[in-house]
Amino acid sequence: QVQLVESGGGLVQAGGSLRLSCAASGGTFSLNTMGWHRQAPGNERELVALISRNGIANYADSVKGRFTISRDNAGDTVYLQMNNLKPEDTADYYCCALGTGSYTGRYWGQGTQVTVSS
Image (tube, rainbow, N blue to C red; front, side, top):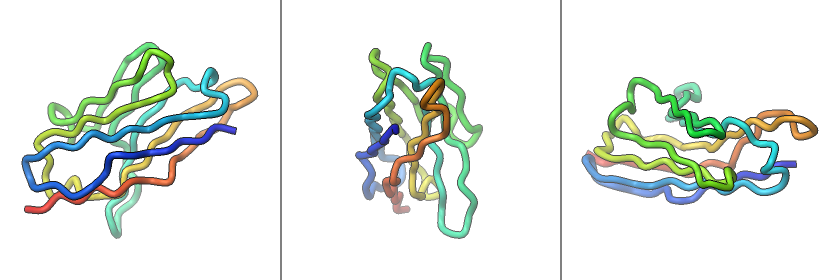
């Protein structure tokens, strides 16, 4: 079983920055794509950014140019650098990972809250 633990959320003023981290454990060698989703109150969970094991990244249009996703060489920790934050970025942010082989499945972290004040 793969476990994902996020950290780095908090309260920040508009225009500020935060860096989220997600550490995976258990079966990390099986992880292919990792990434971040977010869910604001009353909204559905939406994709923020994904990164493959070889470093190819994809972003939602709403965060392009402001957020950067990265992954460590071991492939078991993923980061989300969020710059020029806007109030509409306020949400719970969830780390996700796709396992392969005997760890096939989608895994989720418990979420970390990001609040951007205007």
